[in-house]
Length: 115
Length: 115
Image (tube, rainbow over all chains, first blue to last red; front, top):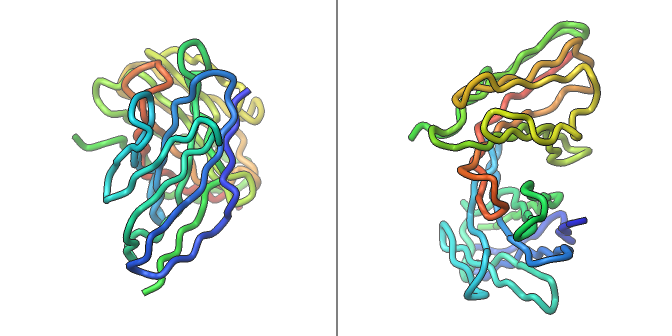
């Protein structure tokens, strides 16, 4: 079975500082990993994904994530946070080749960027 | 592209009434997902269609819930009879393939309140 954990319910960071939102996963095969963002009263919006290749993935709005196979992690990062980055962030994982087609979502992490 | 379209955006109904939520996926996408989001349970997958065929409905909470996809451009989620515990935000999402590597595109959601 596949699972994903977001260990922090909330992350607070000052504007201009780097931010990290953590995600760890568990799958029996090679993972496909995703990050989504949800702004208030909106649906989830795709940010980036890791399928294969370079462990550092770049996505929308200056976000990036690093795939670490040994630590089974896929942390979301941004060098300089903006107040407008404040939102709910979801990590998701699915199997490669033959596994579930359906991503499993984490519980979400609320990112609050203070001016 | 207009993105995933959901209607209505808000629905308030009394316990026992029938509720029908509607979704139009992105043109060309062949997978469609219905989710429910609450504070207590987070994001729950209810049912998943591929090429208009229901593939996995194990997340449908009980027989009061039913979903259909009569064609590639339309799906409905029906609750009959509705109960207060069904109050939640319901999201429809679509993706362009069956493989686990495809990201999902979410609609704006329908906020359902059952009194």
